[in-house]
Image (tube, rainbow, N blue to C red; front, side, top):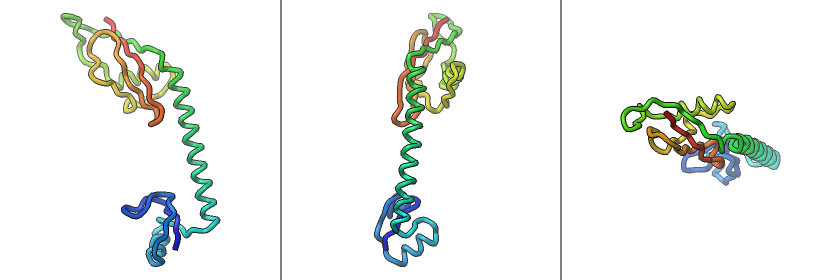
Length: 145
């Protein structure tokens, strides 16, 4: 019997996969609401769900690209206290960078900001921002006295 999987089943199939399984196992999967029987109607429902998911994903990527284009060329400047030999006290964290970006009007989670090492010296530093797995860019952070 052919079924369409509604979720991943370990060592069996991935979500949205159409697969031929034994009748008894198919009845078990259907009873557990892990799969539905393969019919023309269920195939149409699957195709519309996949299309809706893809459209939503494209809209998200488009929104992430617009945010990227708006802030990628901006430089975030931090005024920091320094000690002997212009050594900065502490580090600039992704949380601080996220707060500064929020002041520009864009909410970016601190977990999406990779500092690429410690930001603890005066001057320019690059940070990598991952808004989406397909939208990654670098932004400059400047430390001044």
